[in-house]
Amino acid sequence: MAIPKVSFFQVLKNAKRILSNPLPFHHENFEKHGDTFEVNLGFGNSVIFTRDAGFAKHMLQNQHRKYYKSPLQTKDLGKYIGNGLLTSNGEHWLRQRRLIQPAFYKKKIDVIAKTIRQTIQQELSRVNPNATMDIYPLMNDLAFKVVAKSLFSYTDTGHTMARLQYITEAAQKSLIKEIRQPYKRWWFTISGQIKSTLTLTQEARDILNNIIDQRRKSKETYDDLLDMLLSSKYEDGSAMDNERLIDEILILFIAGHETTSNALSFCLSLLALNPEIQDKVYEEVCAYNSQELSLMEQFERSKYTTQCIEEAMRLYPPAYFSDRVNIENDEFKSLKLPKGTTILISFFEIHRHRDFWENPEIFNPDRFESDNKKEYSDWYFPFGAGPRMCVGSNFAMYEMIYVISELVRKYKISTPISKIEIKPLITLKPVNAFIKFEKRDILEQ
Image (cartoon, rainbow, N blue to C red):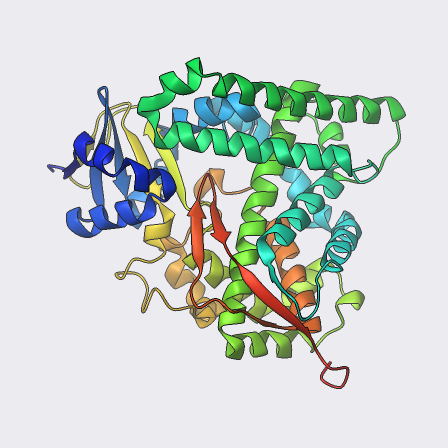
């Protein structure tokens, strides 16, 4: 099959808008060329873009052994956050996944549930009733502190965690320039921008190394994620050294807080724009006392709230794309894929594809009623798919359900905005997510 091509000239012509937000450029080409096309990036480099859900499942699940994460993640992102689950391939990835996954089993999350709840309640106390505020900074701080406290329950997470948060965000801004303007990497190198970011990320590694060393020396246990990771053993009985631990902790900070804060901000904005749906969430959360339930029990009682979160992640998937490179020749349908082909999967486009979703632009949580979920499983990828599906998906869902439930229980949520704005970086971020929280009457509660 002859695949449609987008020329390097078109990339250069649209360079400014691609740097700001590449999604409209992608959408125009999908509408023009169909579900799969190739973009010439210059200097002999190209990448295939796809919104074909079957092709995505082929790479992520059915034939996953033939596909590795591309150098965009293993090399470009890896140089800033190390060789952890998100950025590794092959045997190293498999060994790390087997070691780390048990820390995120539901029973393990219940152990740190008290920490998660206390941290969320503390951060939500910052809500200023009757004032309009941008919800994203609050959700960003909340999600970062939930990860930090869940990892390091006993550590003073004030200045230290603020510095780690600053460094992770600075590294992302640097990386997004490199990814969207690959033809300018020579400039990013000679100008010292890459070196400056690497210096920052080394500072983060030094901070985490000190925390780990202090924990090892203390010989105390705190039943947090760091304890679980320190006590985890490979099949040969050995444990992770500090460098491996730091790689995985940096991944947890980036993947564990950014995607959650983005999803929460989008979901709250959508509930504010759809008061009738918000009322249904309120009815559900008033039917139980969250303080008397475990996180797992609350999750089971929050069916409609869960549907709202799932629908928000359909419209605005925080991990809005993924990429793969095949390590051997392959083909999908009539498309020939020589070894070394780079493919970018647009989950954003798949989640809005008219062939899969009725009225895809509409916020409709009823799509995710339990009877319908299997129907959509082949074209819904909020946490990825296959063996590399997000290891912390349960953690993220419990956290989001608790935050949404607590806010809707206490406040009526409204917004002065009429349309949600987005900023696609490494993850899909909201912009100008202004929300007003009006305290509910005691009688109403």
